Structure formats: structure tokens, C-alpha cells
Figure 1 (cartoon, rainbow, N blue to C red):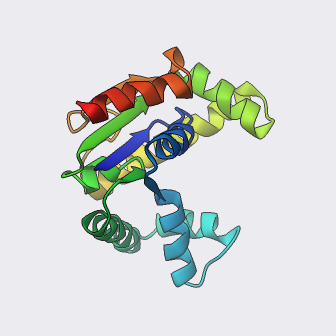
Figure 2: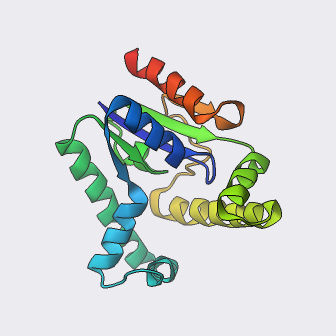
Length: 180
């Protein structure tokens, strides 16, 4: 079974993916790790990688090339692997044949509180960072792909508001969906 899990920044996708993979004994693909692999192939490593992606946005052709590489990597992995969970905001769109596509949401206040706690920063700072990231991704990805990943939820089989459940409860919900 191929599962994709995406969500709003700070909604808990990484936590849920890790817990679900452990429970189901599935492999995981962290799309962020694939991004870092692409950066390394371009000769960019470490802290320079963040700058690399932001600079890529200055050149739409280059940014599209990089996204195409990432999209191809996800699709190649999905064609070869079984019993795998993809953790990526756009994975459901890139792997439409996935058996279960999940999107995690939560109010900004909830996401900022979690991020602030994890990163040891104020909730206000966390909220600003989340909002900036979300706005940037939505704008840039809409240019590249032609859709708004936050608003276009029609591709998903399951949308979960993580503000109402802890990771263990979310895993149980997903397990029920897996078992059908």
C-alpha cells in the first residue's frame, strides 16, 4: 500500500508519518530529504541548501526544473516500492495512484503553539514563520503546478484536523482507513 500524508506547515505530518510507519512497519519517504538530495547533486549542502531553494525561485525555469526532478524521484520510488508512506505536501498530487491520500490541517494558533514548543521560540514568531512559509509555498507552487495545495482538497481520501486528536488517535483513524 502506498500512503501519502501532507498538510499545512506545523499540522503534524512528520509526527504522524513516523508513528504510522512504526505501527504499520512501513518505509517512509521524507520529501524534504529528497530536496536535500537534489541540492547535494547540484553541489549545495548544509545551510546553503535553504538559500539555494529561495534563489531558485528567482528563476522560474530553474525552479520548475528542480520541482520536476523532485516529482520524478517521488514517482520512481512509488513505482518500485510497496508499503511506503510519503511525507510531502504535494505527494498526493504527484502520486495520484496512491492507495490512501491524507491531508492534515489545524488552526494557525495550534500549529504555532506546537512549532514554538518544538523550536523554543515565541508563538508569535512561530505564527509569523508558518504564515510566511505557507504564503510562499502557495504562491510559488500555484505558479508551477496551477493549483493551490491548501484549497484543492478534492484529491484527498481523508482530511484530519489534528487540533482535535493526538498522534496516537490520528494513527488509529488512519489505520481504520487502511483496513477499509
